[in-house]
Length: 244
Image 1 (cartoon, helix red, strand yellow):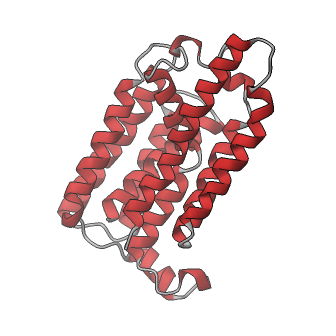
Image 2 (tube, helix red, strand yellow; image 1 turned 120 degrees about the vertical axis):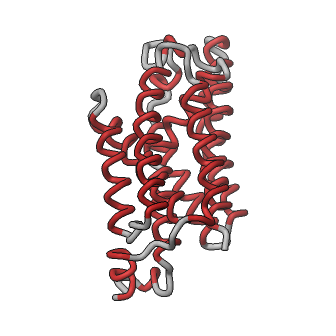
Image 3 (tube, one colour; image 1 turned 60 degrees about the vertical axis):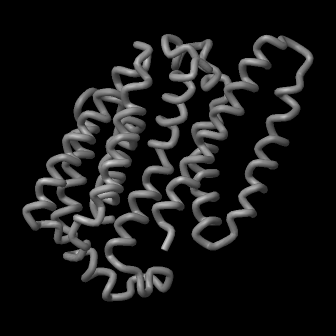
């Protein structure tokens, strides 16, 4: 599982970089570099691990490039296909990965936090990657799916007609609810995640039921439903990776 964790960390760092400073090339380069450094720092130095780190760095770079090309050019399918294929391949070859160790294992051996007691380096690495992906990468995936399904015109993403501009709170609420669902799942209380779904629906209900400008309301409703379900599916799917 060590390779999967490194891959998720690299992609997440690249997306966080884009969200903080949306410049070309640099964020994905930083993400690729962080992935390689984390892998080496975790003792992934066997020949097959080094080769895997090189491939992971390439995937992170390709992810950043395809995401940039997707918005405004109606190419949302390319990054979705890339990340889906990369994760499937990573899961298939996961048994070949060396177990994580190195600096991370030494740090965990010191019992830095009670909640991390007895946690293996492999699982800690995967947990970190899963957590980071809930932040900016989750928002990117939601926007890509919205564009790929035609829910939002990709040529208008970020413009005045983009529902995301009208529902700005979703960019902050999305990561918060994904982390909340992930935490409930790890704590064994996944059914309590229904609270998130119910609360979000109630908060949006008055706006979505407004009698004014029904065409706009229908667009926002579709945006809300598709975006929310994609957002919720991300932490739920990541819990499958974290299952003991």
